[in-house]
Amino acid sequence: MESRANVVKLTGRIRGLWLGCLLGGAIVAGQIGAPAQQAAAPDGGAATQGDAPGADRSHAAESGEAHNGSYVIGNDDELAISVWKELDLTRTVPVRSDGKISLPLIGEVQAAGKTPLELEAAITERLKSYITDPQVAVIVQKVNSRKFNVLGEVNKPGSYPLGVPTTILDAIATAGGFRDFAKKKGVYVLRQEPNGSVQRIQFNYAAFLKGKNSAQNIYLEPHDTVIVP
Image 1 (cartoon, one colour):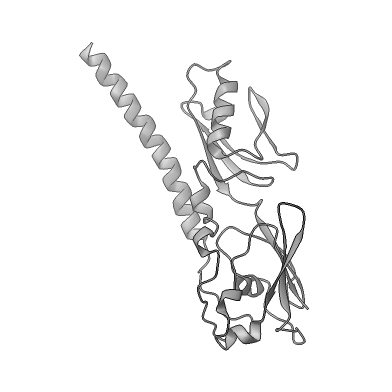
Image 2: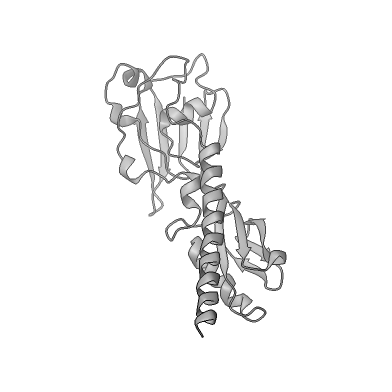
């Protein structure tokens, strides 16, 4: 009996190490891929970023979304699905535009709108029909569903991933900075509220450079659009 108990303990430890290695790899990958947080000024000058309102609720870096109960999976996210001792079921899959992923044995599973832990539970339940005591881990490897837009008088207008905390100044720098005739005093952010209304948030870049009202340089939220007139 003592020998059997030792085997059970050893198996539990190995499973813990397996999940720990998966999480460790995702965190290291996120840290390597994360850009520096202090961006150069969009017009090539030096800018000091003050504390922005909303910093205490800023978005987690990509590595932080790996395995938690709060991040909500979205379309285009890339997920690593691992099933203990089942190599044929362990793979990296993208979340399709319909919000689903496809896996062997169980077919299509709704992923968008769930947290990694909720998706783990859903896959585990479906696998019980085929595998005894399935052990599933879901890790968000790439956050592609959280994006922001930069439009207007910037060098590279477009849509960009919001994988790390990003301010208005960061967004403009990411979009290649201002064009020659950009109205730097008239930059603003369009943000859609849960009730469907659209909030317009002003950002006076010229005043910000002079150290005035640094609180304007807020952190962006998913689907925000920065307009440079």
